[in-house]
Length: 273
Image (cartoon, rainbow, N blue to C red; front, side, top):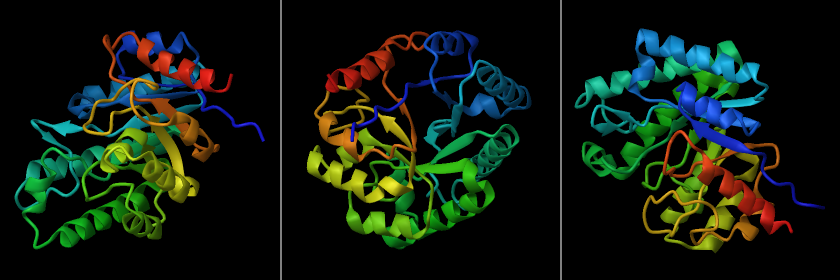
């Protein structure tokens, strides 16, 4: 059986410059980066219109990435409402808005199960790591029930919601979530061990609906173009769920020019030659 390559998936914001740049290359998937401004009254309407615009240009698959930050803090689900009420409410309201938009327009939304920067601070508000994890799973369960087939959850490099530990993965699988798999996050969590990354890809394959294909040196969040890090992409490709979508989530020199994403796609094509 010939291994299918991932389809061309690109990421950008709702800005016309970024959308028009990505549409030149006819991606099959467009993932919207969103931020706090997209959840004002006007911003939400502009995001809604941008999704329809991208759809009108024949892009089949659209994913809305939940905003990463609120103010100076990451939108980490483990943040307790009692200590961080504004952050907690923003996560609630923005997730509800994304689910509504996704349902209305037949697209997908992606929520991070955790982040890393302030995570240890938040965990300290709980009696134990296990207690903190269970709070996050309950919140994810609620979002899953709200979003149905329009919501997915992405892994982080923190112990709250990560891929790379079989026991943690079994716990995640028991909740029957639709999963987004960031290859670099898993690789970093596994301290640069390609065998662990491949084991995780294989274990979770059937539950993954979307991939962030991104390289890394395996030490920190470096978001490298494919082929510039230490991930063994020849080993990764056969383990991808061929029914899932994917994008290249690469740091760009210029956010209005997606060349590093395109270079990553060409790199994967070169592996088949």
